[in-house]
Image 1: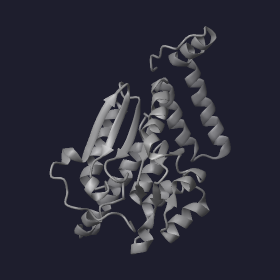
Image 2: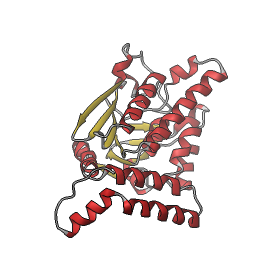
Image 3: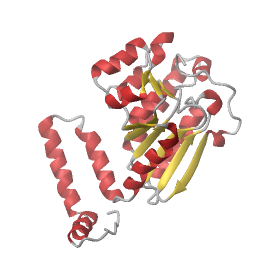
Length: 271
């Protein structure tokens, strides 16, 4: 695909645009517009945003996996929807919605894993880059091809440029050429690439490990990680030291240390 997907006819029932499954603290969110390569329509983004907002406050939810139905993960924005928006204000609102969604992934107190196959293009690539971890099928292609249709991938470049090196990000943005899964791994966009038959297992490997941890510890750790990225070195160390002391005083840290010394499994209170 050369650019963000132009949608096929929309699924009539908006509730069908996103599927959710839960079990053992792992929430699976499946983008469900396979006929349009799961392009991010306003309706789909709204549902995904709502689910992330609920998950943020759900003590039973410990980790999130985002995946796509059908032949690919996500081909980006719905170009048919974009071209139907005739005013600057309407297009600004759509971009603001997308930015809010990507920030919700980053700010979600629960770790978020992208399980990627087929294609992750433009805003789909942005979604992968916004997740905390990502695993991909060996055959997956990652691209920011907006330049091919005269529409530079401005918002996808924000997440992309915070994951891969500057030269590799600019290569994708300026040429529109796709990056394969091995290069995406080498350049830091994904954590693993595996044969398609092993993709579920690779995603669940991370999810199950994370689900066993203290959700309090994960929450403060994730928040601190993203905060320190925007600080100068000295400020980052000062902030991290303060957070670590607070973490030391938490009930779960004391339980975890005691369990380690006593050679037993910890019992988390998530506080």
